[in-house]
Length: 174
Image (cartoon, rainbow, N blue to C red; front, side):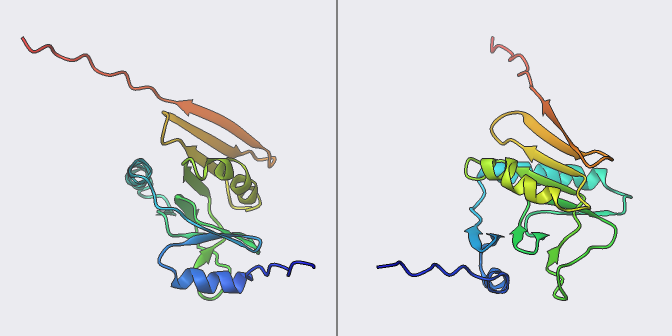
C-alpha cells in the first residue's frame, strides 16, 4: 500500500499563517520552520548590536531592523535574520509590504539549533540577493564574529574576527 503524498503548504498559506501566528516561522520551499525563543545571551547580543549599529548608522541613508523583518530570499524561501540593514527604498515582494527583498547587510547570532543552517543554507539563500553586500555571523559562545563580504566581482571573502577580553586583576581585600 502506497503512502499518501505529504502536501506541503504553499507560499500563500505560509504567509497567511505567519501573519496570524504568535511566533514567526521561516519557509524553505514548502517546509515551515518555527523560530525558537532566544536565549538570554542571544537576546543580549542582538540588543547590543542594535544599539551599537544604531549609533554608528546615524546620518547614513540606511535603516536597521531587529528581529521581525521577513526577507524574501527567493520566491519560495522566506527568512527572519536577527538584524537587517536596508539602504535606500525598501523593495517588497507584494503590495502588503511585509516582506523585504533588498537587504544590504544581514546579521545572524548563532545558536546551537541554527548554527549549521545559518552558516550553510541561509547563507546560500542570502547570496542570491543582488543587494546583499555583507553577511555577519556572531557567536554567542565565543568571542568570534565571521564577516562574509561580497567583492565587486561577485565572489565572497570570509574574515574571522576574534576578541579576547582579559580579566582585569582583582584587588585583594586586606
